[in-house]
Each structure stands twice: as C-alpha cells, then as structure tokens.
Amino acid sequence: MKIKKNGKIISVLLMAIIFTVINSTNVFAGNFGQAVGEWFLDQLWWIGIIAIALAVIGCLVKRNWVAAVITVVAGGALLVIITQPNTLQNIGTAIANLFN
Image (cartoon, rainbow, N blue to C red):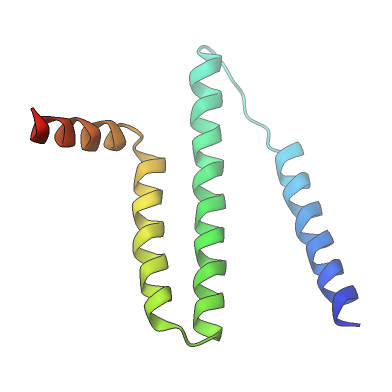
C-alpha cells in the first residue's frame, strides 16, 4: 500500500512540473537567447531550492543535524553560483592568481 501511495505522490508531482513547464507563457521579444538563458536560470534556481529543502527535511527527519547544516551551506553556495555564474569565474581567477 505504501508503494502505491508514493507512486501517486510522484505522479502528481511530475504532472505539476510538466503542467508548469508547458503553461509557462514567456514572451521573448528582442534577444531570444538571453531571455531563454535567464528563464532557464530562474527555473534551475527553484529546482535547487526544492532539492535543498527536500534534502534538509530528510536530514531533519533522521535527526542528522550536521548533515542538515552542511546541506544548507553547500546548497546556499550552489544557489549563489546559479544566480551569479560569474562568481565561479572569479573564484577560479583568484585561485589561479595564488599560484602565479
């Protein structure tokens, strides 16, 4: 019975995600490539938020506090890189300057 219940939840979540993607009505006027890139980064940010929240909830259910804190810190760093892709380039440049 538990497997059927989880299967229904997964089905509902997948249908909601597909419905959201299909019905996202963006008007791409002017620079199409830049608008698509920004839209993709926005969607990726929300997917990251949901993934981090689910991982933290899983850690908290198991009462694994250290893993929850590490997940929040690593997830926050990942979200910063998603919202500001140039951050990764700046970090790479700083590391390269250390060795030069």
